[in-house]
Image (cartoon, rainbow, N blue to C red; front, top):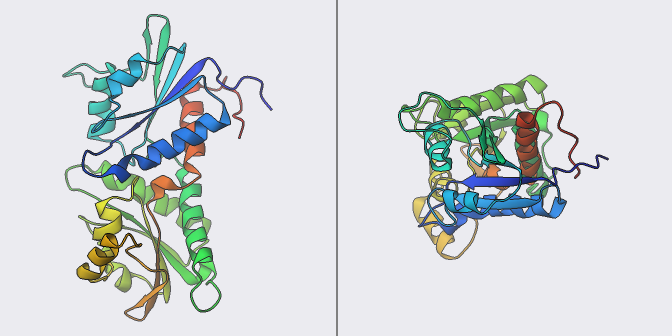
Length: 289
């Protein structure tokens, strides 16, 4: 066990946040609490783009010699490459690129990549899918992974190709392990669409894991409807505080499991630590669980 647990450093987790959906910030708070529990850093703080506490305010309150900043986002793009670096003062308006490690007086800022593009997200996805099927076996025993098709569902957008790249990469990484009968990336706004799952799968059983940080409107409302749940049933369950999808559900001759968004998966703190280890360099020591 390493004696150095980054006790001279602060960790800052940055989420998108929302002024309309309180659940949006929940995963960021969840993982910050877990990382505080592990006692690796002198300070662990949460900040958000769309709600309080604001990014610039939190940064001013960090006094540690080193500050590691991890975006709790799925993909690289406008927010992680432009908005957040600008709020941190790492990137000036009009700059094409910026240094990810910058000195501020006696303090060094380390700006990490988003968690969603890290290879270790694979373990979080696998755990999420495995646990959901095990926890909700239906009327019989849970099907083996080889009898399941895994779909990783993302938003997708024609405006940013990086939006789908992280999801397709995870689908390829999991497919290469040959755990499931097949693994596919599907999207809300690009092809292949989430509603195409029924035609794409050759197995009777399939599971859909949303590659979203929070269980917001897309995860709790839009995707269940795209998978065939009647909109009125989804709205009724929301009003009653119930899950909007019941596992497993039989539809169109298939048996379907649907998980919460990947952002609340308990493996995410380890992904965050991998991002810190990555930018800290080969001299960084092992983290303590």
